[in-house]
Length: 403
Image (cartoon, rainbow, N blue to C red; front, side, top):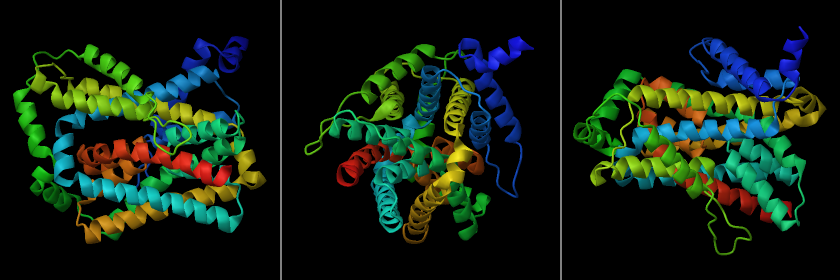
């Protein structure tokens, strides 16, 4: 059995494939478990990864980073393919309101984190990490670390990553629980909600989707791989493009997730108008989406699992609590405002919260609740601006609190 032990502990291609595949398989098996009416779905892959990391399993760091980022890119790009045709219609009909609510959620999250940090005396770097773990925003964490390094001559602070790792697992759960709690608070009847959503077809961009679907009939059932990979390449280049903002010490970037999302939306929206074939079969797109989110969750869980329990026992458990507060208070407050004062549908609110927190698992969960992709429209409407604002906010928090 030495060969099997070596396969699990010695870094290499085989080790990476086996560990990631086993984590995904175990997570998907556990995803069939329901806790009451709540099914965490692919979030179980994250927990399986944490358990594997805590048990001592690991993979080569560069491979882990590639799997995480590539998985996220695949998932986000597939979402852009699906909702791109109706993105601008949704933005014109309700995008200003949705993005305003998303900006409110982001601002409330930052203020909540700052207040907790001041009242508890938590190190600002750890609190920034907790904030971005609580909203599951990896680009924001990276922006904070990069800003800190640029402003301190290349120094690093492990508290960013430690706070992030502590808050991330329950950040995913907290966002999902917020969406579920709002469903109970508003006493949502999914059939009635779907009728409301369909009646507002023009506002949700559904009519445009039907119109474009009628114009762009698939000529075959082969997946359009050129469009997928060429679009991803363009998206990554856009995501890595430095954007210089006046008054900022370092340029900001849209990120490896934001760039492909924007490109996929633009290509699928303008492609048919320019006689460019951007059609991808529904089954191929769904396969890309599920593979992407599974890879992403497995890699994140495995990385967060190393020393997870030790950090909790040594006092990091309070960071977990802080993260839950930072996650749920802004989500619930914005959800209440969106429902009671803006009269938005529950499907739109679920997508809004998922997009404003830039949380793919929450979007997957929201779509499962909706029984379709209704939440995806609101998600993609607010996601690009939310990603940009979170990156900006991360750097501002480092400048004003960590230096």
